[in-house]
Image 1 (cartoon, rainbow, N blue to C red):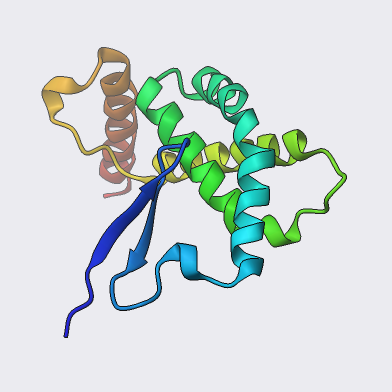
Image 2: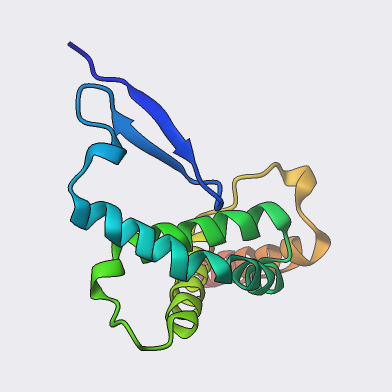
Amino acid sequence: MLATLEPVMVDEIGLNWLAMNDHAPLDAQPDADSSARREFEEQAIPFMDQLYAAAMRMTRNPSDAADLVQETFVKAFASWSSFTQGTNLKAWLYRILTNTYINIYRKRQREPYQGTIDELEDWQLGGAESTTASHSRSAEAEA
């Protein structure tokens, strides 16, 4: 039998908390998990607007900023047990946000360009032409 995913709840962040339909729903999980989740929501959610503003400054794009904040909260929730209570939660969340942005930026830099030649700007073509021209000249000189 195939198990399907059902949306259980959409919270303030916009995250879809999912549960397998052949398992107990999230509300029926042990108290430790639900208390950790409640604790995370109470402490971390108030920083969402500030994190979104920082993400907008980094990405300069509303949808990318929203994705970055969502990824930050997913990572923060997954690592919530490693957070030391009484320390600076805001700084911890900002560090996760910054590291996530850096990782995404580096990943995009490693990916080759996927658009059409018509979408390229002149400055992007200029570097490509000079690189290919110098390589072909050196190959001809060697021959």
